[in-house]
Structure formats: structure tokens, C-alpha cells
Picture (spheres, rainbow, N blue to C red):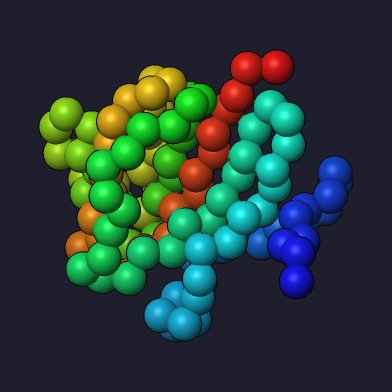
Length: 108
């Protein structure tokens, strides 16, 4: 089954998942020519290995606590937002069950 992405003007609920977080999965929200938006779900103790992306990246911690390593460790907790340059090598490690809004911005 193909992923269904948000349509223009469609409202998406990004409030904390709370108790539902433990059974939730990462979800692609939008994939467009100039950007992609994904709700990342990381269970405590899990992470994403070091990698880089071909675009500028923003991460907004919606809930939980995550360590971002991008040359140094940065702790992201609920409400924290960070920007990464295009091609910046980074990894993520969840200290608590966590969800984040990730956007990747591409050249037009």
C-alpha cells in the first residue's frame, strides 16, 4: 500500500502522542519537490546511526529526550528545535521514548 501524504491545507495533529507513543511508528507527512516532513518516533535506547542528508534539516522535539550528535552532543527535550547544515553528519539516540518533527529542505 502506498503511503498517504498530507495534502495542501490538510491539518495534521502533531501533539505529543503520550501513552500511544510506545506503539507508534515513524510517519512520512509530506514529500514535495522542495521539502520533506517526517514525524520520527524513537523508542528509548534506540537511535539512528550517523548519516548525512542532501538538504538543510530541522528537528523539533515533540516529546521525550534525544541526544543529537553532530560533532558534539546536543540534548533535545520537548519543545527544543535545532537546525543542521546541508550534508552535516549526525546521529540520534533516544534517552526516553521520543518523537520529533524532522523537515528536510531541498534546493528548488
